[in-house]
Image (cartoon, rainbow, N blue to C red; front, side, top):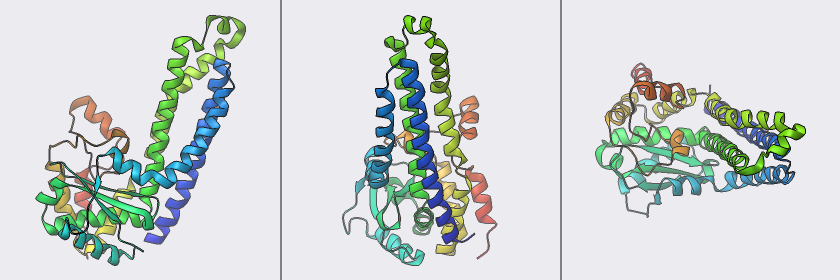
Length: 300
């Protein structure tokens, strides 16, 4: 599978996700409007779904950076990182070098975002800049540029927005119902069945949105890893970097939970027991051990 075929597939997935997002929001708004006997909920849902999709498409990179406390790096501030990023962007055939952002944190992490290669940005933590060897940092940057090249950045932002907004709308309905939206006279008037359906949808919709987000193949991480090897010709560099990142126990406290799927590794502190099992079940990334094993087995 070539970078161009991955790019085309992700462009279609993005448009499909946006249409599903609009349809899901409108469907939920219709049911909630019927349950609460308030047609303005439906009109508001339609306007919200369309407008938020447009805003997400154009401004997602700025939002993601702001949510994670990242600031744009001035020219010459991180010369080594800038040099690596520029060289990799040229090797990858990107039209421009993505903007570089810095997150002040000792945690080891990085992510990329942006609607397309012309409007992309890469964020790194100060910890990863200070503690990784140059070849390891190059492997991480190559991984992120592979996401940019494959249009994963746009796809995953849309998926994250979908899951988050559906959850917000579901919570809004539950609170409106709790504070008087589903009145007793409505239930006695035959509206009780619709209210029950709406409650069930409010509970299940966030889970459905999360599963839809996970349905975007976790293979994208393996593909980005493979893309990094093509750019650097050094599979051990990224494998060593991933092992360093996996061994780092410092959480990235400034990270926004809604954007955790964008990072190269989970930005939050590791959990154990049932919480860890549930986290792996709904993880957007494959286990680092599997990624390292795949990288070690690659030839160049």
